Amino acid sequence: MTDTSSLQDRYEFALQLIRDAGDLAHGYFKNRDALTIKSKGLQDMASEADLNTELLIRDRLRAGFPQDAFLGEETGISAFAADQGIWVVDPIDGTQPFVSGMSSWCVSIAFVRSNQVQFGMVYAPERNELFAGGVDFPATLNSKPVPRHPGTTIKDGIVGVGYSPRVTPDEFLPMFERFLKNGGMFYRDGSGALTLCYVACGRLLGYIEPHINSWDCLGAIAVIRSAGLKTNNFLENDGLNKGNRVLAGNETVYAELEKIYDN
Image 1 (tube, helix red, strand yellow):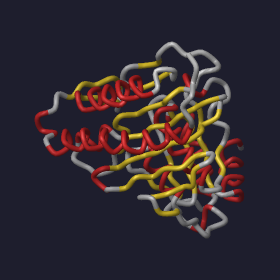
Image 2 (cartoon, helix red, strand yellow):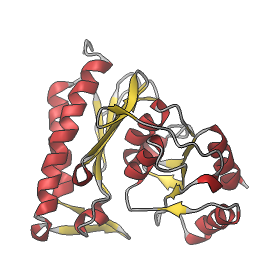
Image 3 (cartoon, one colour):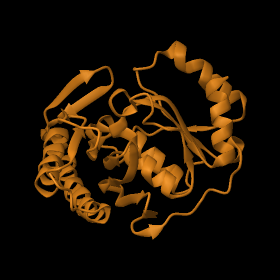
C-alpha cells in the first residue's frame, strides 16, 4: 500500500484523537463506581474503560491510516513489517489511580517508524494537560512551549522513580539505595507516562525505572527528546515488544542517573 500521508497529517490527527479518547475515558472516570474491574496480575488492573478507549483509538487509526501497524496494551500488536510505521498506545496509563479516584492517569499515543519515535503525546484529562512533541514538532504543554528545569544534579530537585513487580525487590532496592545515598529525592504517582512528561516540562529533574513497557513511555519519550533532554535508546533490544529500562534528564542529570543505575 502506498503511503502518501505525512508525519504532519498523523500528528494533527493524533492530537484530536487523543482528546476524544481522553474524553471517553474521563466519562468512565466520573462514573467509575459502575466499572467492572479485572486484575491482569499483581498491581495490574483493567476495566472496560481501558478496552473501549483503546478500541476507539485503534479503530480511528485503522480508518485514517490503514497502512500503519498498531500496538496497544489491551489488544496487542497487529501484523507488523519492518518498513511500516506503528502506533503505540496506552488507553489509560495509571489504571490503579484511575479506579481509585485519583487524577494521575492519562492516555498515551506514540508513532514509531524506522525504529525511531517520531512523535508522541500524553493527555491527562482530569488535570486538563496535553503534552506533545516529536522529531519535527516542538515540545508543548497545552500548545505552549515547555520550560526546562535549571538543576544540574539529582540534588537540585525531585526525580521520578518507577517500579513494577516485573522487577524483583532484590533487583530494584540496590539501585534505589544508591540513588538515595547520592542525595536523590523521589516522586511517584502511578503513571510512568505522566511522570516522564513532568521531566519534559521542567517539574522534575529526571526519571529512572528498571523496566517499563513501550506503551507506558514512548509518547512521553518523544516529548522529552523534543524538549532537548536525553533518554536511553529505549527501542534497542526489542524494547517495543519486551520493554526496557528508562532513564531521562538533561545531560548531567542523565549521566548521574546512568552511573547510579549501572554501578
